[in-house]
Image 1 (cartoon, rainbow, N blue to C red):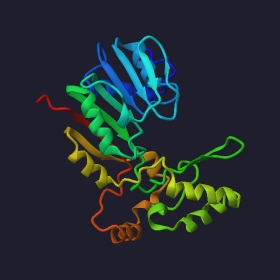
Image 2 (tube, rainbow, N blue to C red):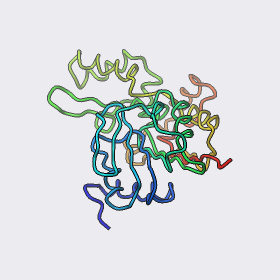
Image 3 (cartoon, helix red, strand yellow):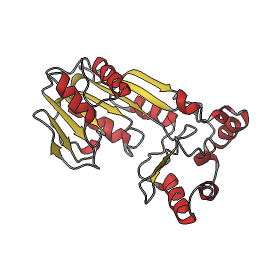
Length: 260
């Protein structure tokens, strides 16, 4: 079976999503935070027989991408979809960006059919060692991010903005370093939720929890080995008493709308 224009990782995720949602055929499926090309949705449309595939992303223009695929430029908490009109919802690397997650979960519960499923896999979350999610482009189109610019683990939680700016000045001009340091702490792109915040929000949602688990990203963990420093972990414990899950890089969850 062919998966057009998809990497091996994306192929794997299509299969996992399909299993989690109980298949795609003859269903209306919604994706939260679809990419510009709606790659996963277009792949699903080419391999299966869904009724309709809808992608939501406020950053991209609304458009049709085939007879069964459309993208809507809208926030997920205001989907505009009818009650009980969606069979399944999935999302990949988007929930860490959603500011009002409780509202999104309420909206997804509203639009799902009874028994409908919501599957999401996302990270890095704010409370992990590289949870600042640093990602920026310079004027020459070069991309810099937490994969290729390595900050001290939990710098965004244990260091000041000025300290982070000084780290950036070792790599970039001062005005750029200042702008990017501000972005780490104030960007609307990150919701700054800790692992236990997600746990609390999910438990308070109207969904039945089938799966909720933290996960590690081994390739990135290898770049941040000092995240296992007892000194850092004790600093986090002291500064954020009662918090947990600092060593989880992200979260995978599967929720179901009850039939009653």
